[in-house]
Image (cartoon, rainbow, N blue to C red; front, side, top):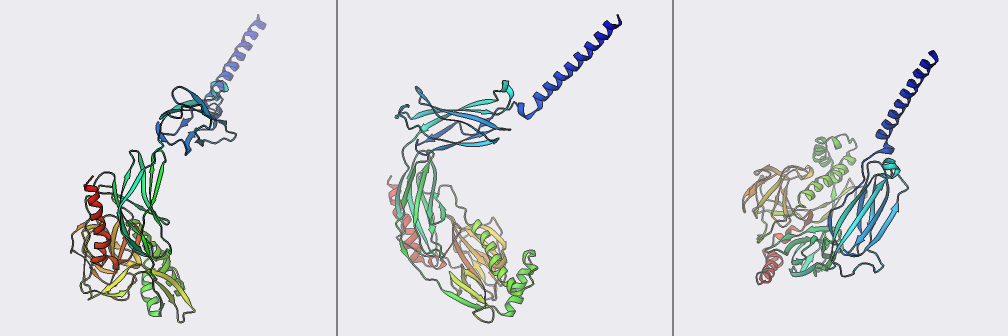
Amino acid sequence: MRYRNRRKKGMKIVNILLFLGLIAIFAYVYTAPEFEREAPEVHNKDSIFWNLITPFDIELVDNEALYSFELILSDGKKSVSIGKSTFDDKAKSKSVLVHYPKQNILNPKANKLKLKVIVTDKSYWNFFQGNSSEKIIDITVDYKRPNLNILSNSYSITKGGSALVVFKAEDKNLKTLYIQAGDSIFNVTPYKKSGYYASLVAWSFEKDSFHSKIIAIDKANNKRVIDIPFFLKNYNYKTSWIKAKDKFIDGKITDLASNNPEYSGIDNRLHRLKAVNETMRLKNEDLIHNLSTKVTTKLLKSWDIKKFYPLKHGKKVASYGVKRHYYYKTKENEISQSFHVGYDLASTRMAVIRTSNAGKVVYANDNGIYGIMPMIDHGLGLYSLYGHCSEILVNEGDKVKEGQGIARTGTSGLALGDHLHFGLLVQGTEVRPIEWFDQRWIKKNIKSIFRKADKIIMTK
């Protein structure tokens, strides 16, 4: 009897231990990363356009580790596996390229395809088969490239200058449209009617060569490129050597440096000059470039621009595009270099600066070496800036009218005498103000280009 009781008691303990063991096993299975139950995902749109020539990416993602994938392409009647592989590493994401099959299994005239993507992870769940998921991607086949036609463009462009082009771009599935000039990108503005566009372009004075082209890409990655036939005019910009005097370094340079923690700790006077004239200058110009890159995507019915004349009776005191070499005591001891990217005008102290064209104030504050500086957006990517002011008469966000007083000249920033530093930019690229001072240049290169294009557009 005692033996039987002991045996029963022992069986209970064994059963309890087995039960606890099973609980531990189930707990491990449900919590261990190796048995995770989250299915992998395919991060792609449900429908795409494809030209069957350019491969496209499929993004596979899992919370732990991917194991395998298969791609099956179908034309509705026949199907073919176009990709199948396993992954040896424990990557959580993979990008897989989809290529159209070379063998003639699918209907070459099919304009609709379906791609089935099957992906599995490395989990031990599902009896060591892992978690899997499928996604169907609908494909519209599109072989046709966008159509581009130039309606009118400026005959020529000068190094450091501006030009205009108006053109037509046709493609019901158009995705990307822009102008490339060297390493610069110029966004285009819808003009007059749907399918027509206009853009100012600029040739940086720092670039010796210039080649501009319109590039259109549709959703199927079909691409069309056409050159803009500008006649190129070279221009040699001046070089000047400026002696950096102690009064200049200990005055303006030190004053600018002392107001900025990044430069205030520079003890060496010549290093301080270089830091302000180059490092600070580039940061100030980065702000200007960023502010002036925006161009509207709204339909532009017309764009009228008059010559700029910001300072009454203003006389030139410095030209645009000059490369300046700063030296200390002798020219052999060159300290710093910089470019003057504006046009300096002076008249009387604290003279009123007026905007010659309507626009919107995008900046009205201090900007380092440029001092107190308002900046105005005139549309079509053209921006004007007014440096070294003593006072700003407008606020950021204001809409200004032609002839409105916006500021007064001064000596703020890196200015030794009371004057206006006037700058013009086309989508972030500084351009020659002297062109925009000339009504005849504007008529020939801007207004007549719009008129020629308008005649074509309005007869459509």
